[in-house]
Image (cartoon, rainbow, N blue to C red; front, side):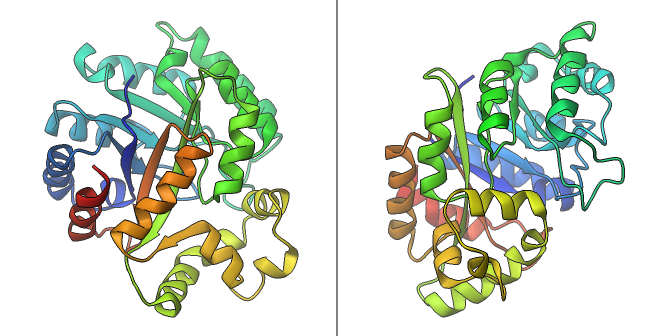
Length: 286
């Protein structure tokens, strides 16, 4: 499955207007992006039934469409496999099903996430017909989940990470596994305004243990996670500046071993399609 080097990650596909989602998807394909990531909220992805993916696939001809990510707690494996195989073969060929374990703060029955994901992958393999490993990817941050993604899926899709994480993740993967890194973006040449916008977006994630542990693991200190996040944390997780400066950050990720970068443009609300920003970025990146 060809994801291309640059994709777009957006909550608007799953939370915004379905008609505009189709229009935006077609435009993004024309702009040259390789993959459209249907973003899910921390508590789960409302497109777990793949209905949104089917709409976006129907509106496009070439791009890969990926879910980022379906919560394993919200969508039974057998139902997900059935939804996948209900799509026509030519659409399945462009669909990548991202899977995630979500967060203890969001899921009442959250227990032993690694074992739960192993069991979920086993159920996908046992479904009739199975959802193939080549059509799924894992949202992973730690080395153990990353190695599981390499062994049982196409690869991993880390979210809200820095270039240092890309280096570490690449070292935990074999050479054939896909590393599709999300990069959050703010098109602003005013650093303080960009950091303020970043802190607003980051606030819900700072309360999630999985993310806090991931950031501490890659070298940040507890004080970096306090008071909305230090400038050091913000500047590492968010690429802000001109399209050309964003492109320079992408180059660092690819040099560190990322195969694909999914750009998430920060918007004021999850239902907004950042179409102007996507066009500006395409001119520099696609």
